[in-house]
Length: 346
Image (cartoon, rainbow, N blue to C red):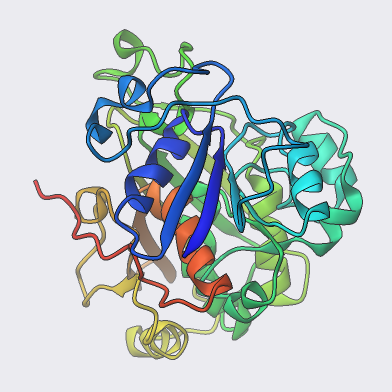
C-alpha cells in the first residue's frame, strides 16, 4: 500500500487527486493539508466526497508530519512548493509536484516568466518532467516528478513524435488553445466570476503565457534544436476541458498515412492516448472527467498545412490524473491503475 499525503488538498487539483485516489486499490491517503480549512471536515469543503473521505484538513508541519508517507502530491501554487519539496526529499520521500516550480530546467527562465526566484536549484536539476507517455523510463527511477502543465500536455503529446522524427519544420508552429474556467483555480477572481465567464470567450496572455517556456523546452528536446511556438490560450464558458488546435506547414509533403504511422509507432501501446479515425476530431466532452488525450488531424492541401486537434480534461490528464499515472509508474503499478474512468457523456 502506497501511503500518500496531499499538500494543498482543497484546491481544484487537490480535490481531483482525492476523487481519483479514493478508488485506487493500492493507495492509503494519510493526510489532507490545507491552511485555509484547518480542522474542517474535508467533505464540508467538497460534499461530493461525503462517505468517501471522513478526515479533517490539517495544517502540515513539514518537520514532524511527513514521517509516515511514501509519496507526497504537492498541489500548491507556484513559488510555494520549493520548501516542502526540499524537506520531503531530505526525508527520503518521493514527490510529485503539480506546480510549475520544477518544470523549467533553467532557473533564470523560471524567474523571468513566474516572477519568483528559484530557491531549490539542486532539486530542480534532479527533477524529471512527468509527461507519462514520453518519459516513463526516467519516471520509474525518479524521486521528484515535475508534473506537466495542462496546456503543455495537450500540445506536447501531439507534436512530440513529429518533431522527434524530424518530419515537420519548426519555424512556424501556431497553437490555439481553449480551456474551461476550472483552469483559473478556485480562488475567486475576475477570471472565474460567473457573470464574466458565462456567454463569453476571450483570449488572454497573448505572447506571454507562463506555459510557453515549458512547451518550448520539451519541443526543443524532441527536435534537438531550439523550437518556438506562437501560443494563444482562450478562456471558454465551460467548467472542464482543453481543446488545442495546432497548425504546422507540411514542408515535407506528408500524406495522412505517413503521419498516422508515426503516431502509431509512438502511441499504439499507450492506453491513455486515443488516435481518432480519419475525418474525426476531438471534443472536450469525449474526455470529460477522464485521463484520456484524444488526437485527430488532417492535411489542408490547399494551404499545405497539417492541422492537429487534441482534447484533454485539464484537471485530470492535465493535472491530477497524470500525477497518479506517474505515481503508478514510479511504484511499478499498471499505468491505468485507479484511472479506468469512462468519460462522462453527455
